[in-house]
Image 1 (cartoon, rainbow, N blue to C red):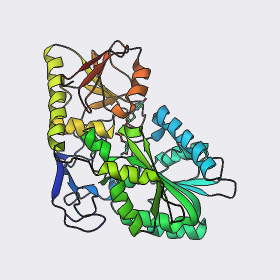
Image 2: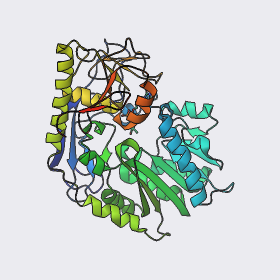
Image 3: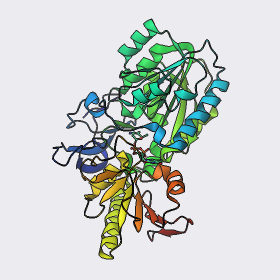
Image 4: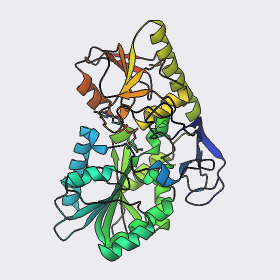
Length: 402
Ligand code: DWN
């Protein structure tokens, strides 16, 4: 396979997670067939873009992000609050007013644009965009490409601010996607991109965030190569706690001086150690299977919370099925009553009982979820980066490595 950015032949494997269905391909019934595709990640030793090997992945982009793609950003109150704070900050920092135009690419259900007080619209190819319209947010049902950008420039005009949160990693043609921002941004416009930071993925053994819809796993080093090739310059970077540790990158067309924040992150990325990642992931997998087997032998009940895409990677790489984990509870109506891809574990609207243990798959929302479930007598279990068992009093048991 060749690098998606620089076309260099890719040799170096970061991790191989076997084969599994796409992590957001929830089943309507157990009679449905599903395709399994190899899931492994390669590192470009030329431009350092870390990327999923799609040489055997035959699904098209529009077959991954189908109309009924079931991820709704607004399910997490913390994430919506994060978006609200961003809107207040960015409006003030760049003096957005009624003459400004803001465009969000991957605007999902209007979780962010609902807070904008200045002209804006979203671009969202999945049905989540219909939810945005219910919030009064204009949402254009399209994939964002450079051709779309040329069209939007002609009909709606250039943007003062463009936003792309957790979408840059989801595009196969990352060069063309970024070129679209260059086309649509005003000469003094700003684009901000938020994405989970590769540094935390590696350091925090967040291998469960690897799945087919993540074409890339992003570092500032790789991003700067891609942006430069498409006429954008990074002038500021912020480290965020969201999604296990993310970056917010600020880019423009070379107008603004580079802040010291950029060199700081680039320096940190020089120390990323890729070598032991597979072994660390295998340890998490063994802890996960071992925990479930021990619970079953001891007659303890276990349920899951959060039918997250990341949970499907952990379940499928571990080969866990409903005999060890009978169901997962999730607040997303579009997921309830469906079955997880691969493991075929049912997604329930409510807990069927008070399980002895609740495995929280979206560990990135752990605080919010434990606050929500704090009334339950269950113990809460997470496995990334280590096996950790907590109860509502916050008493922790560790997997024995501390
Ligand atoms: O990049 C992506 C990230 C940002 O979100 C996308 N590829 C898709 C998605 O990945 P994920 O599914 O692993 O995301 P989360 O945010 O870790 O998953 C949250 C899941 O947990 C959702 O199914 C909703 C559910 N949830 C819930 O039911 N009640 C979450 C919270 C906070 C809750 O209170």
